[in-house]
Length: 255
Image 1 (tube, rainbow, N blue to C red):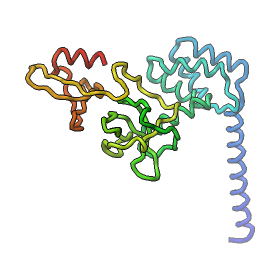
Image 2: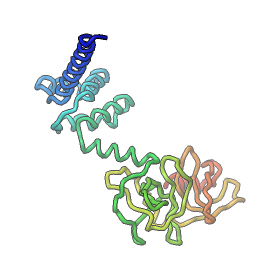
Image 3: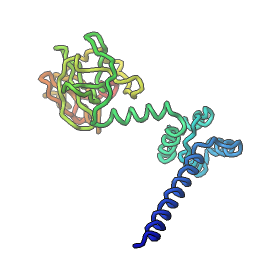
Image 4: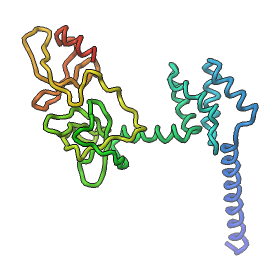
């Protein structure tokens, strides 16, 4: 090719790059631009209308924005929609709130991290001998010298160690000293502590529906209509709820 042809190709490529940059800058400015008074009024009315179609359209519009300054009124109006019975509305409300509330997005991202198997940041929230721990509590555990991982407390053991299960299915259950356990950041969602548990849950005698078979075990929870127990030898078991005695069924349901 001649020098002129090469120069023409370079010029066209530069022009395309500049046009792409211009379009990207315009889109960024549009996303970051605050809502006009009319846009805000229309959006708030739709979110408060109870009309699913109008609500979803407004949430889609809000998801496409990236405001530099959060609007408390918009945030407060989106918040109740997180609990909407319509799954799509709830999901879109979550996405819109992530766009409009940096604090909510930080918490949401942290909770996603604590459901996975990748390392999490050092919370520096030390667990001591007197720190209350309960089954289901989300903590961070360190089984290697370098990293902390999200974990679920299964049981605070009598020997002072803590039986945990790493989140994300990366490893099996493990018993760790409290020096290798830390509390998760306060922003991480936690299950409610069961009122009937003290800080170190004790095993009790569980009896099957025939009354013939019994086992000493600690209650860990109910999942898929099965009662999860931890035997005194450390082995975990899951017993169908209807296979337990009526008394134990009622006890498990109460917990």
